Length: 257
Image (cartoon, rainbow, N blue to C red):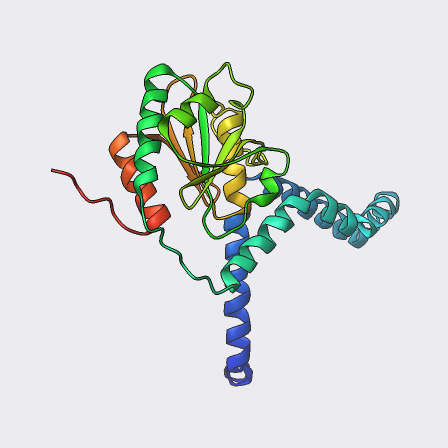
């Protein structure tokens, strides 16, 4: 036992620590997703392969051997969205970002006024706030506006009778860049069945970027906020205002007397 301890280098401890941390983060990243279930299935296949090889069950072992040889290519195809998301997160963490604080937060007041009216009238909406990550790819097939944010503009866009109401609007630095944007849907399998396409799109864009999504439910009028692939539902008006000020500007909203 002492000989083993003497042979352990500090590099080995560092190696074990780093790999443990990476494994933990990967499992945390995949927890509750369809990807985790697929990986679990792959683990069962590998275990079965080694067992059939050990006990010389030749036919099944031959089939699994041929299947495993092409498994890597299959996994790359199946996990393409997850691999992309992981690379985005790694790149986002590796880059040095200059945090830009907008000069004015007045446009948020227009948004709050608009969503409160939507809540009363049960008008569904999806508003996406761009932060550091560029969202241009989601505007390619959308209607480019580059307009000043206003309550009236948002209400007209999300009115059920307009052609743009099913898509999202993207806001950057207080400017409504585009409307009718269609976003990637999340592939998380552990979400509530009460969350519809609008909520899943709101989560999806925050899985691939650092954007913040604000959702108004068409059925209930409830507010929800999605960020970093997670969604908080049934957010009150007061909490919504504080949360958006914190997420977008890094400051708490001052209390008005």
